[in-house]
Amino acid sequence: MSGQAERILITADQIQERIRELASEIERDYPDGPLYLVSVLKGAFMFVADLARAITHPAVRIEFMAISTYGHLKTSSGQVKVTRDLDVNIEGHDVLIVEDIIDSGVTLSYLARLLEQRKPRSLAIATLLDKPERRVQPVEVKYVGFQIPDEFVVGYGLDYDERFRNLRSVSTLAPHVYA
Ligand code: IMP
Ligand code: MG
Image (tube, rainbow, N blue to C red):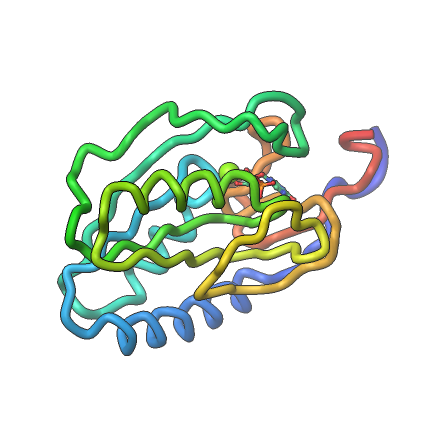
């Protein structure tokens, strides 16, 4: 292996600044609370941690789900399965799904349909990153951190084969890492 593995696409400072903007929109849109932030493991763990800290009103709950999309390292296969479900009842509550990235939209359209069946008062989606060019299934997203081109990215929670999640910035991966 030679050369730099990653090239920074979005710096740590840019991420934090955008999260502050999203948090103030969310505070404005959900003044009453409680607001359930439902975060999708593992990729969204860093985003939900920073987003939750940037929201100043106290009526925020943080819940986790885990989902597996069988198959390839770099794409969703279309086979979505809940591997860890919520341990709270969201019926009648405002729910905001917090995701790391929307690519094909397969994961989130499945998850949104699943949670909608549980009759929340409202259901919306926040994603740090969005690759709109890649969409296969339509998803209505209320809060988008950054739209990015169709490139594989890592860092700030996102992995390639479980690596790079700890990076503070979002970076593109040089093809020699995964080609
Ligand atoms: P979707 O179901 O195709 O929208 O894929 C969503 C999931 O695929 C994300 O939650 C990530 O786990 C993974 N994913 C999609 N694109 C990337 C990427 O560029 N880097 C890392 N993971 C990605
Ligand atoms: Mg993920």
